[in-house]
Image 1: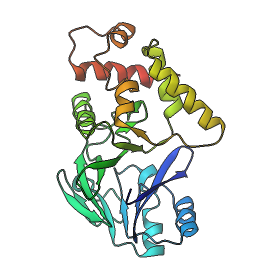
Image 2: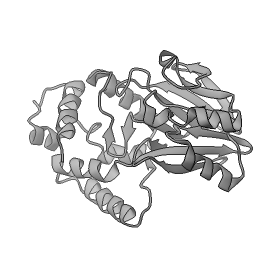
Image 3: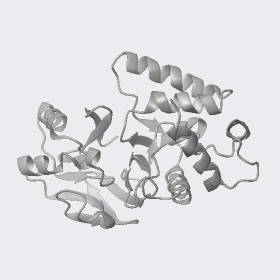
Length: 260
């Protein structure tokens, strides 16, 4: 692999990421500067870019401090987030592409959690997708709350992410894995992939280790928001057998909102 992805724990449950390809260094979603600076200094590198997935403060709160410290010229987010992402200099939209070291980065517009949510897809020299930074659109076994978008938008966004292919790595914005898998188990109790993933995640957290990242293939087997056609999930939540995927996702999302 021609690059490194380094998770950086921030705030209480956020992740920023360093993406290092040769001498090209980007920071994804720096919610606060301290842990990100420490991670950069430990590796003796300086960022050239900040990639924001959306405008929420717990994803952009470190932007200005990093720009001030390192003179970062590239701060990107969706074009519709103009004025809401501190220091933004690049206003991206679906289908845009740029280079980062040996990588090509594609931009996916994935509204649902927010209307300006984007994902960054990293591709190697052969053009195949290696991994994607999903922000709060897709988590391990979950998706973000629908603060600005609709269930139909979220369904379409998740479908676009899953179209990248099963082997693609997924790096989300939060450490929500254990709680998400507990919910997944509650709505699809016979799913052994969920049970195994939950056991693994609980062990990792007990050891103080992060659970990120996952893969599209694993999410296909464990994420209830993309498994809305599951008969067991529909029976558990009282979803009509003929309900369309967006309607079903809305019911799953409401059930997750009240899950404790």
